[in-house]
Length: 133
Image 1 (cartoon, rainbow, N blue to C red):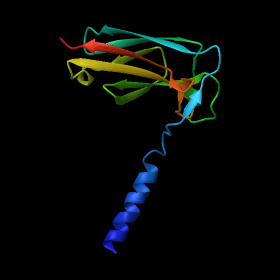
Image 2: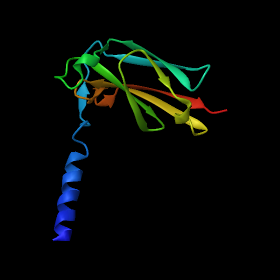
Image 3: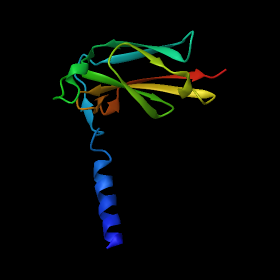
């Protein structure tokens, strides 16, 4: 009986592991969105990230609602760990996330239902590497 309960728990956990944010892709429409990043050292701590977007509408009020063409929010990753959702063109990244000699910052364009926008199946994203002193 104990093994059966353990098995049921594992099945439940496995199927719910990805339920909150499905990893499906959403093909972008033309004109295709573009994204560029600029990272500057903050005077107090960490870095400030400027995100230059074209042909993409940030709509935080639409998160979790029906997908709309080239509309949604951003996901921020530092060293392949998702740090936050982003709803504007500026974001402060605390210094505690920069713990490697080379730190990879990645921003993806995401639809309202969290799927990544793509062009021909390739995610629309921008990357920048910050070298730690």
